Amino acid sequence: MKKYIIANWKSNKNPKEAILWLDEVHQNFPLNSIDKLECSVCVPYIDIPYMYKKIKENNKIKLGAQNISAFGDGPYTGEISGRLIEGLVSYVLVGHSERRKNYNENDQIVAEKTIRALESGITPIVCISEEVEIANWNGFIDNKIDPNKKKAIIFAFEPLNAIGTGNAEDPLAANEFINGMKQKYSIEVMVYGGSVDQNNINLFLNQPSVSGILIGSASLSAEKFLKVIENAASK
Ligand code: PGA
Image 1: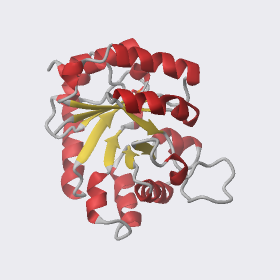
Image 2: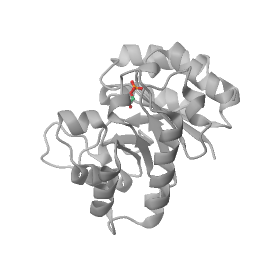
Image 3: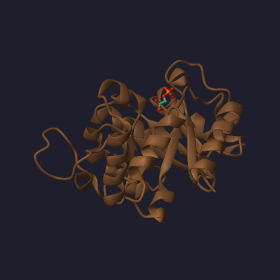
Image 4: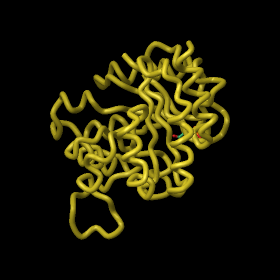
């Protein structure tokens, strides 16, 4: 199974900067990674229409959003429903700890957003930092989605003290946690995120239960992101 390399730009890059990044990544993309890695970038909404066509034509990386409305179309000012991005993105992040913390997203909202994404044919990347979040999420989602669709969900284990700090989790501990969650909740794909860069990526990818990585800061420079892919593909 291919390992996932998922970039999360967070609230960075306007369309001009996004296209510069994308052109550089497309031009220098390590072609030997294509059989081994599934690479994607989750971008601010404003960048999606500018990036969508180039990403489709090049077919090297996939496009993702960073949020989705917990509701459908309708009177929800400022929100982007699943239908509005349907067909434009392959993935959407839900429940990132920055949204849980700054926008009071709880496990129920995260579960609703997961369902909305699946309804629009978008693969949700559900971020969790500890088991209780997945246990609650599971309780809310239970019986509301087809078990086959549930298998398609990507989970991301992101310990709070590892995000943006330069202090990545111990790879063995990440593997153990992910392995436990996969078994307990019948999860197929769970990646690790938190201070991954070109130097430590293979410590995580070498772990048998780690399905890939979610990478923030080190994805902002095209050069660094390409190095991450190059190193991951060379192992
Ligand atoms: P980081 O962010 O790689 O900068 O630690 C990861 C994330 O928040 O997804």
